[in-house]
Length: 188
Image (cartoon, rainbow, N blue to C red; front, top):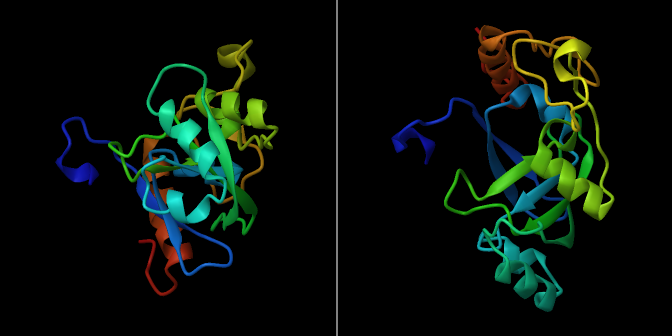
């Protein structure tokens, strides 16, 4: 979907298996180095899985009513969980008004320690915030959440092979992730 866009983003698509179902939620991210910090997944109200996962249809209708608006972010917990493929963490699946079907896959991995929109949503719904990259204090003083630039920072809760220093390292991480997630493929 991304390849034909003007100003397309360079990144990776990754699947989050849905517990108890033979389904996967595919997300696109330009920051695979933050994948270890994904603590929840959000779907657009119009995502094909939304209707199947939500039991409280009235709450889904309420989220749909605020879809795409700049107002406060609304969401509904589906009662289902996905599995973070990098750390096997069990993370809740939400339907959220700020996730757009028209952009990417209509699903996002939410990394609240490094994304303001995800941070606001996590704060509102009491979701965990896991720091993956610790920014240099001089550049990020006073920011919340601490969103480090790609070229700076040290690893927080991220394996030692999770390079975060510059763009070239991000490309190598993407190749490594393919190797980790698809056994038999080579990261070279």
